[in-house]
Length: 448
Image 1: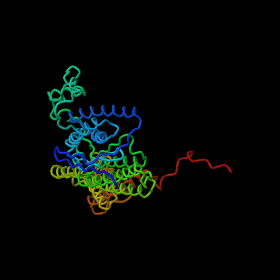
Image 2: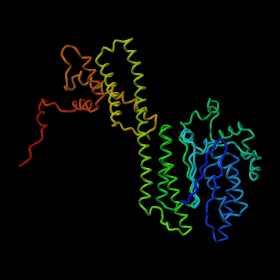
Image 3: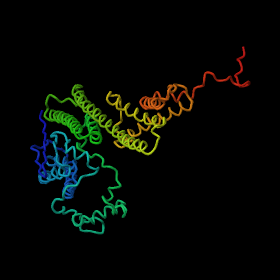
Image 4: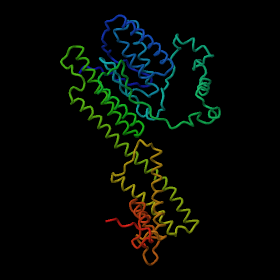
């Protein structure tokens, strides 16, 4: 399969130019070629500014890769793209801690790259900025020299530039005085991107291929957000393997069409190739689901441990300073909390505990914290219903063993919510020895 894989390993600021150029068809209409050249010249100016400013995206890298060997462009323009491509690749890799591997197609305009996974998981949203390179492009020098319109050179006074940015985005003076600047009021950083896909000019054309790429990107974002480092790395490698296999297949098919080869079928014509990719993607999704579920269960357990720490401290305080530990109500509450914890741990080891990872770590821990609270509440309610004589499910044993009795009932209430609900439901049921209704309230018999 004649595909060109450009494996680019960026170490520090170093980058290697991919050893090959894409094959792009020549446009027959001269006017169309002229318009394509004008658009490429605009792209070149934008790429130069992005390179100097340090805000290079993968779109800049991929578009420059395809422009530098486009036969529809003049040789001088292609040479300028070829000269700037290594710098763009370097500026893209630097703030993302390097490119692990990249795939640039030769016969369709699609490229993909995998950057450092650990860095992407903790990076905030936005375009990472690399160090500025050299003097600014001549086309924007006059704008940078004009202070009045707010386009001053940010290299001249970085502190003044940050102040102007904070003012433009509405950050108050008092927030800027606090340690950490305005970020102290921002939420926790969301996951950035580790897999970068850049399709241009509508490639790939097949909608089934587009769907697989969308699914890969969607799963990649979820893996960055909800997985821990080791399973995250494995999952993203599996996803990127699906992407490179798909791009290689599409690139080979386009080559066969261009050269009049025998394999000119559109993608998806053979159900086996689509099923293979979907099966590999399903394996990556199954791995993500299992790893995310384990992580969510651990977060749930952390929330319960936080409650247990408070419960132990409260129990010690009660034992040292009050006589409430000898009360039936107290042991029923503590037994309910302990029963809830044991119930969750039993379901966790048995595999029946299901938690939604997409709820977020803070929400899952809060739910884990509330589970023993619910158990303690059930223990207290069951104690009140039994001790108050509202229901007559069971009775304390003779001989004064009320503490152990209510502790066991509290534990059972926290361990099994069904038991507590059944006890509470007894209060809504009509007693069997209820007196008959007073005269005049009974329903009249039906007429014959």
